[in-house]
Length: 140
Image 1: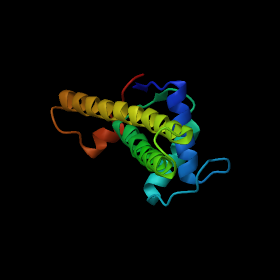
Image 2: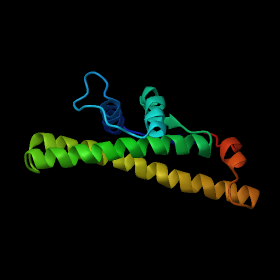
Image 3: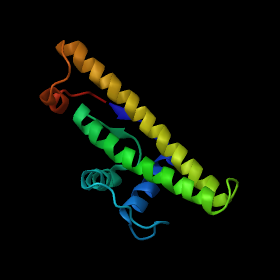
Image 4: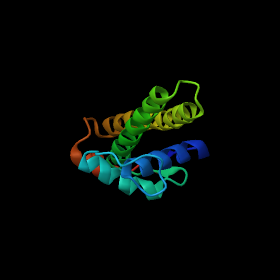
């Protein structure tokens, strides 16, 4: 299964991931994210160069967890920028678009997760088991 991402979405997610992790060159300081979310963001960051191939529901859920942490950070950053200046300030508008792009990708991932789960249920006749979540493969 392919998760299509345009340039603006990839850049927003990369910037949000770098900021969440506190990497040099990011505009904000590191965030104290739960260890599992942080590890998922670290694993996702090198893959944020374009479209993502997601072979299993388990892999998608890992990406979903990382994106959720990134989007939450982008939301907090946007709110902070709006409160620091005003809603029409350039930094607030930039932060809004970064959040909106990330939120859009997360929404698509949520839809794909539902579709993957439904396909597994249709094929197996049952709610996806932990094994099916890990092993049921979706082609690109």
